[in-house]
Amino acid sequence: MAETRKYCNNKYKASPFRGRYGGGHMAIIKTLKGMPAPRFGKHCYFSEGAVIVGDVEMGDDCTVWFNAVIRGDVHFVKIGNRTNVQDNSCIHTLNGKAPCILGDDVTIGHCVTLHGCEVKDGALVGMGATVLDHAVVGKGAIVAAGALVLSNTQIGDGELWGGVPAKFIKKVDPEQAQALNKTYARHYIEYSDWFREADSDPKNTQTVTTSEDYKH
Image 1 (cartoon, helix red, strand yellow):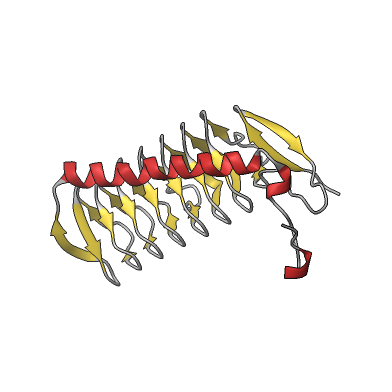
Image 2 (image 1 turned 30 degrees about the horizontal axis):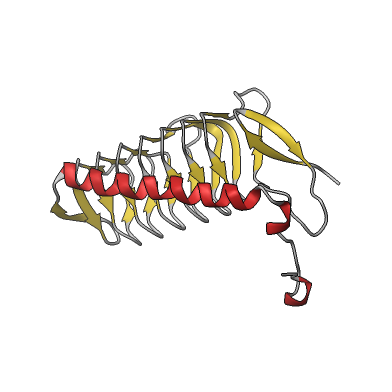
């Protein structure tokens, strides 16, 4: 059986799957030929099912949650400190033309798609939103849930945008917005510590196919 990789303290550590009990993280971290391997800062957390591929650089205290995918296969992805990428989100790039860059204290909600764009410090992209190539989301800005931010859109600092396609809704105080979004970012660091504690005991994670298989 192929082994998975467990990330800890800036090194990859083999963590073979052990039957019923998952034994901790089961994220996939993949290096591609001819490009830099993924690089991480301190205290990053990767949930089961997360996939990180290729030229991806991540700062300290970042979290990548269940089934999120970060693909640095055709351009680089750079992520700052304390940024969270929530469940089922996808971060990808435009082949040779547009990397994906996320600043510090960024929150990427559930089921978000970011493609070849930039999201600056303290910004929040709401659940189910899509941000396309060469778009820029400014500092402390908010992209509403379900919004479609078209290519080359420039969202200013502290602006709220929403809709399909996304349009300017109102200006919010950039400092207030950044403070609020930093709170979300800190919450996700706290959540990751809860999961780290659970992962410290392999029996807390079970792999089952039926409810009858689950033992408690």
